[in-house]
Length: 345
View 1 (cartoon, rainbow, N blue to C red):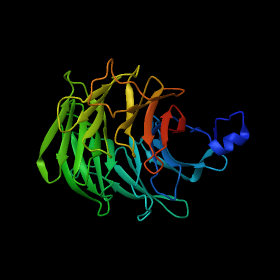
View 2: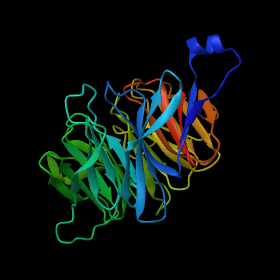
View 3: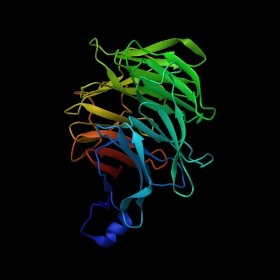
């Protein structure tokens, strides 16, 4: 499937300016999606299908800078059991490690992309030792500070920390009273999770018996479905409530009280991404077809009528997925319906 940049009138200016938007049309509805981090693989992303059947697909696509087309390499397209709930490339900017891609569905899988353009399954990791059956994985996060560690979240109320080099469970703990929907690392041994029990909890692997509740949703039984931890300023995290149009931003030094609530979406918010290069910018996207970028530098002071976004982009359908490129921070990727778009911000 091909893709194109949006044409403009003046071709010569266009060459200098480049397109601000590139679109790729997949042969199926896209759900999971992630930017590659490696310096030698610019504009490369993984996308995965959302098909209501056992066989699903993962594709690795890349923008060809010379002609503005996002292309899929048939050799880097592979079948996947069930729709992946998330996919992440190894956080390895300097290309020191093998080129790996992880996916979560029934199990955590780690795939190796070889130099001769093939994808092979490197590891299949099942955290449920007592059974071949498993609580499906809702999400996972790859630890940037220590890339041998991946943390997964499951509907069976647990979070599992894997050592993917040794292919063993480092830690498994009951994290919440109900399903855990998302997990995010905040440092080498610190992670947070959100759950159907409506809480954000922070865990420190040095003290596994205890967790700190950072926030609980005000109405009982309102699940928190996504969590974003600000990598540039780890005091801040953001979460979204199921079927809610607002984003709750938290300061972990002041638990229970949101530091700001972002309330300009007109329908449910599905995805959040902190800027990888700025401590005070966040992007949010949702069912109102909108991707909004916010400047939170004034978040301590009350703003009359609430905060407004500084940038808005309207897509062609409900935006289900959003990723901000850490190696090329002026690019954000969104997925809606069968389309992947990368936007220059």
